[in-house]
Image 1 (cartoon, rainbow, N blue to C red):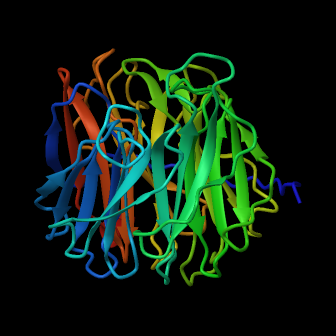
Image 2 (cartoon, one colour):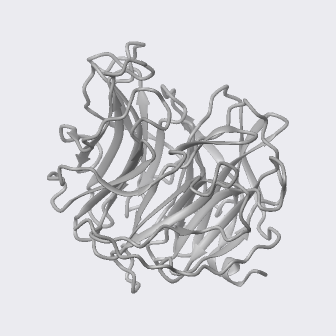
Length: 427
């Protein structure tokens, strides 16, 4: 079962000037790095929502203007996540410091809380929490929802104690299920090989879940410079071993000049559309297998439920020696088209940075690339930055969200992109 199909695909390389209007969502005034996540409402594609480290924003005009609808105090600005169901209801997850009764406390990050919006992100209601071991720290939730049912699948990293340097301190991947976000199953330990408790490349990180149309569940994560995979055909029984898919040289937390450590965590996706690639599983990540001066974006695909995988395929097709980093990816479940957003320095010899989108309309067999940032920016070494970008898509409406840094000031931006404009744009 662990054999692989080694298939090399060619990627068409196209790069040109940005042609899409950039829109600032907000500035970031916090003194720590934040995570970003975004969704396009499947019931109303003019409505998108974005989470920026616990601050919640929404648009009702396809990204032309954004409004802030609320915020939460997350224990860690990078420990937040946003997703949506087929009805257009939006769910927000964050790690909170609580005591054993769930009351706010500095005792530890013991619970993952849930909010829900039924009006496109305009208002939010408390919706429940994921009950976890209150003697441990629960961080970095990522969540998926069944394409038709109300089933939510949440995964996160559980630390014995975040930041503890002792060799015996462990981090592991845990999972919970819910029928609507209010009540959750008891957590299940999924990963077997533990990471450490430091917030770096040797902890279990980047855990991403997906659910297929026929109720099968898959997750992927990174630990100690290796990307792992697991699956369940009933949502509760997992393989019982960590299947190593590929090495990740540099680990999920790798150095990039001008920023420091950046996130190259794997992003798992599944095609639940009706296109010819229905059921395909994709995994996207960044690593430094070509050297510390040449970070690249990679993709693998399985067409048989994870039994076999293609060889890692380099998405960015610039000349060797430049950095492409911090990818996030999504599949438009109406079309099956794949979109990957990442930072790019192919045009520069220093830390100046652009934002690109790579897209595939043929199941990842080939990609085209497009610069989507209107202006270059230069991050400030040692200053906080985002831990990830975001991109969401549905019915040809694509919402990328990214952070830029100008003289140390962080801001978060998006662009208004229609698939037809992207496919027909000057290459």
